Image (cartoon, rainbow, N blue to C red):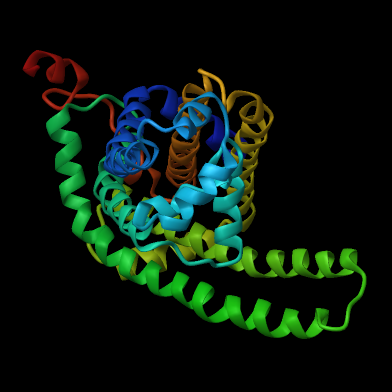
Length: 331
């Protein structure tokens, strides 16, 4: 039986053989955030005008002007805080998720739009990774359309699960139990250790549920399942039967993600105010997209290698007319 490391290597190779997936998802991210960036640019230009503050803001950080801008800003302007500079943005996002902080309406709307686009594209992406061979554009978007409505149904179930964790369990743990445990503490280190332990206790089941939903998508695509409840049950069953491999693979991919964050934390502080700061931040986004694809590709590879009736799910040999050669002729 192939090891989880073999599935991980197979996942890396599948992503390497589909570089346009990385480029496409990165472009989609840029296009979705561009309207907010243009709006914010207009607000900044209007507030700065031709003032002396404009010159100092262009040459460096002017915190006096920054505070003045935030005092009168509304909408997307309220998100223009010092924490968005360089690696601070990553820490801000991590802190927001860890502490279940709500998003400003405009950012929540943008995140919802990104989620909808991702839900549309993920079917085609996973279909391409499962086939592990080139497909034409029409075939890719056909797969996107086939799985879009199915993944919407699965998304409703996942939203209910995450709502339970972040709206019910999180306040009970952190605002209730943890608050009582630390109310009389005078040693900051002890309070920090308590909080760290509660983060672990909260996110371990969250990550486990996330993994089950991942394999539900895998089974939906690889087996062309129409019932998302059936796919979810099948995904949970696969995790239950292969706990070491599925958890180990998830942990291995998570370490890759943490390594990307760690490298960015070393590079971003020195580059955030330089001419190459934007390029480095975009490279970080590209790496995040690649890691996201690695999660999907390696989980698909593991499932295809472990399923009992592997001949049913194993990727087919390219055959006429459904082959890269046929695609090239048609194009």
